[in-house]
Length: 169
Image (cartoon, rainbow, N blue to C red; front, side, top):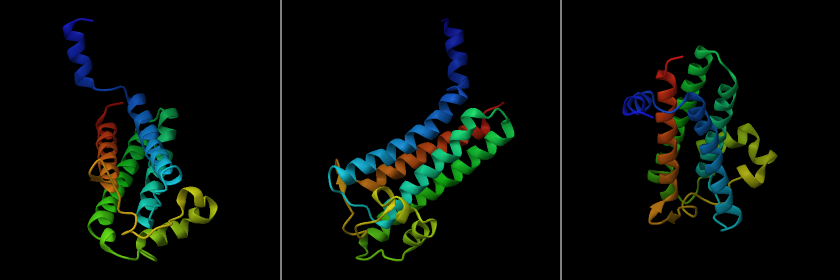
């Protein structure tokens, strides 16, 4: 490859199918890591943790069809929906850290009501049921609160979604 072709490739960025694959794989990997933390290391989730899992799954579900579809407008709409979901995930992670983590009870909070209304806690309790209060679930990994890892991943997903919206074709 010549220097000129390398420069053109870097200006265009990653191929769209790879970006869509990132939008599917990263959120599912985050849920997988949360499940390992829960079931292997006994780090039980609070309602806000579970809500973030739901949002990660929703981002993957919204992004998966875009891997198969060729309609640019539909892809942009799906990217927009994924971006909005990523923004909701960032808000949930920030709320968990700054508000819910200092609360002794997060029973019947917005997070609890959303997950319960979707019926996911009853259908898949091993994935979507909250077993700890927000204060009890406040755990650090390498000196950083778990929700900040989630926040960072939601931010990456929002940036990728923005790139997909702006990317031509």
